[in-house]
Structure formats: C-alpha cells, structure tokens
Length: 113
Image (cartoon, rainbow, N blue to C red):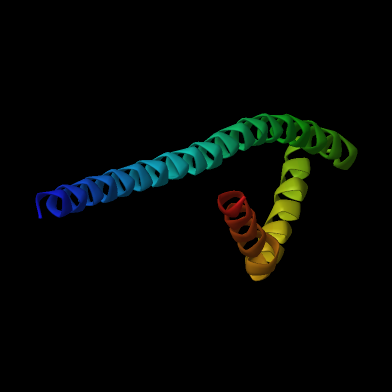
C-alpha cells in the first residue's frame, strides 16, 4: 500500500512539474512574440520618422517652388495644403480598406508566425 502511495505522490509531483514547465513555456513564447512585435513596431517607427522628416522638407521646398511660380510664396503653401486636404478626405473615406485592414492583418500574421 505504501508503494502505491509513493507512486501516486510521484505522479502528482511530476504532474505539477509538467504544469509549471508548460506555464513557463507559455510565458516565454508570449514574451518572445511580444518582443518580436514591439521590435518590429520600433524599427518601423524609426523609418516612419525619417520618412516624415524627408517629406516635410520636400513639401516646404515644393511649396516655395510653386509659390515662386505663382508669384507669392504663400500661394504655394495653400496649394500644398489643398493637396493634403484632398488626400486626408480620400484616406478618411477609405481608411478601413487602405489602413485598418492591412495593419490588422500584419499584426495577426506577426503574432501567428
């Protein structure tokens, strides 16, 4: 009877160890995926910051150039602002198809890799 009790206790201890190991593995996998997603976001954020700076300076140059063609420098800024207002309207109307769905799919693909 004592042997059966020892076997049952041993089995219970191994089950506890298996549960703890499984939980630890789940934590590590979650941490790995979280770190992967976070590092991907940070790397894209750096690229986006440099792209924004590039386009900001480019747009100032274009606005000044258009303003020079039109005779008044602020006319160029109005033209560039109107262009971006039109883009904002288009993206506002089609934001689900152009932004939301692709970003959602990208995040889901990264998590399920």
